[in-house]
Amino acid sequence: MRRFGTQGPVNTQDHYVVQRSDEIADYIKHVEDGKYVVLFAPRQTGKTTFFQACLETLTVGELANTDPTQVKSTSKYNYFPIQLNFDVYKNTSVADFYDNLYQDICEEIEKLYQRRDEIVPETVSQILEDTKLTDHHAMRRFFRRLERLLTPQNAL
Image (cartoon, one colour):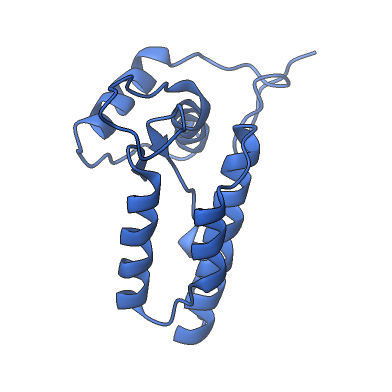
């Protein structure tokens, strides 16, 4: 029996949920256009649930271009979304911040491939093993290298 969810993200199997297909499509369109998106609403109005639905759509619901000139990736997906919660890093040292951030990024990448029933490519595994984030410059270089490996996907 379904019930009203009163805290945290709702589960569509257990809770009453208003489908927001049009809003999700609009969000995806903003992402495709390279625009920033801000979710601003009062507490408990479905922001987290909406965001998770958008990420799920980007993770498994968007099929890639069939452009034959894009041959660097064999993936059938356009986007490579990685969800991170920066609240968990507050009050940590710089070294701990980058170490924990990198571990979380690696876990999210592995989880994304699992969600898509794909094996992490050797080139991606190698960059994950070889990289050490120590500062914002190392992080920027890591994401540039990762993006080159994922082409034609867009890292989010």
